[in-house]
Length: 200
Image (cartoon, rainbow, N blue to C red):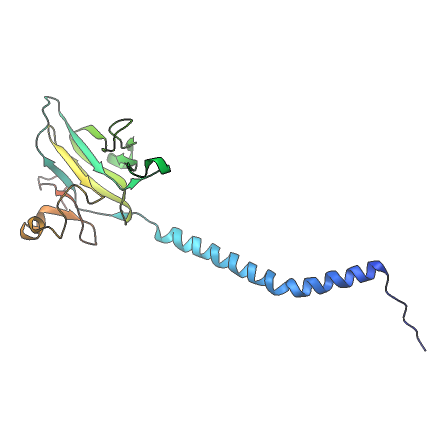
């Protein structure tokens, strides 16, 4: 008859570890599955976070600037942000980028009129057509053409606070061709006049 010897301390420890590994196997498997799912979610999220591209150019709406230069102004009301709890009552507009021909960066705009101002920056630019990439409230990034005319101001309203919106009677009764809109109908600017530049 074969008699079994009592297990040593090392053998008992190995058995305990083996039992714990078997018990933890479903948890480890679930963790791996969740990590893989999260990675696919991030990849899919990256694929869908492409900026919205508008093709209609925004042109000047505001009255002429009192200036004798050959420049016009651009004001972009981008989505606002708060960086600290102290700023919660005073959000500032998010930065944006202005591109020139060949998608060359012309300027990166911090987008504040001053150190203690909530107003967006008024940027002077030579007359011409540019592209702006900015954050729109509730829509993510938007890339759109803008036309700068000497002595005039072009306004881009991506936070819906400056220009009349679709619910306003002035927009509903006015010519729909006058406004550039996001796909959800929000007005972002005055359509640039068709003069060979900024027209599709």
